[in-house]
Length: 73
Figure 1 (cartoon, rainbow, N blue to C red):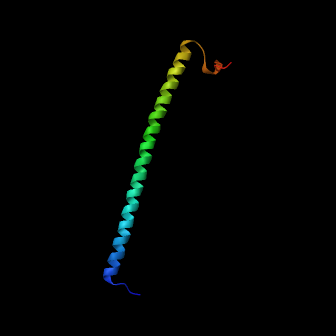
Figure 2: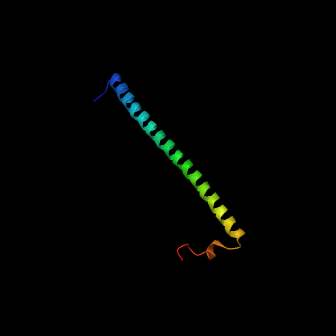
Figure 3: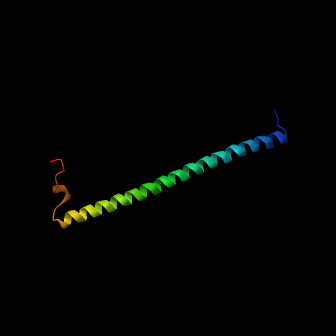
């Protein structure tokens, strides 16, 4: 079956709309993942800073973290 020029253009327009929607959805996903990665980076930096602070406190007392007993002992 041979399609008319008008039918072919209509099919191309439909395909274009679907492609544009997929691109929008992918962009939303990429943006969300980027924001999640930024949040994780901030949290990791906070945790690293806390660990450095804790190590500093322990070294001030002359001990090592590995030598410390947990509070429930």
